[in-house]
Length: 334
Image (cartoon, rainbow, N blue to C red; front, side, top):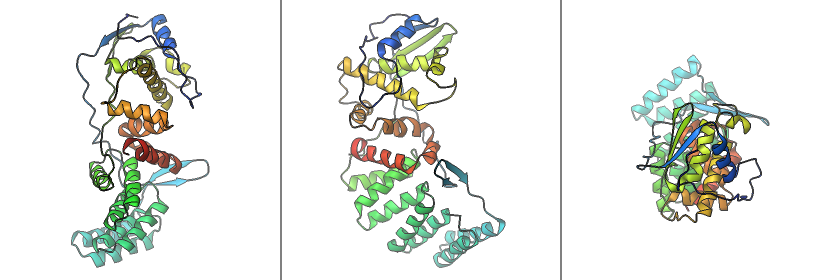
């Protein structure tokens, strides 16, 4: 392992509430030093641009079945009869024939009551008619049948805003954004509602200033900004050290939240021991506050996992989604 002044020798700090096996910074350094891999540590030459995740979206085509032991996400399947009625309803809607569209959408539900997305469309019809009361009723019906219907949460939020129920609007648009993390139109509604509720709308994507390059079988370059030293060294082991992920109980090539947990705890330890100032760095400042307020896992899910794999939201229990919502409202966008 090539030594560098960038590496900060750190003592082990036990963060309260995290009892799973993770390595201390000194253990990480020892693994790197003893490795057959030559880890070459250097200062990052220029900042890494944040990844654009705007094309990674969830779509309004799924529902989920929840049992006591599992959550299954399935795509809607329409019978020939239901599809024919739906197409007719869509035709009426496009032609702005709202009354006939409403009749036809309700006929779709009569033909198949499990097509829960149609409840959201019916809500839209009432919203277009200026009938917020019935719009809200139908959006709630859609959510009750299929909690992952992000459109129902989104439109419900807009209707709550229209009737000046800001608390309801904030709650629902936050859930909508969790369910479709990178949707720009949801983000626009999110900002509008949060500004009206006098909440912070500062936004950012998790963007580690670390670049790990495998030169050959025996050499790995780890370039990083000094703030990210703890994260970068830990991440290099997960990415390049033979047998490391397996030693942590994770099959090689598979993702586990344990990887991000260990790397982020290593990052926090490094920042703490180096007394690094992060006042003007919202993602690091938010990470520290999330750990202090016991929203660490929620930070990982919302800011690390969901931007890259938004479909994970469809597998999260309602309790977990509620916890992420609380992280957003109490830490990220207060």
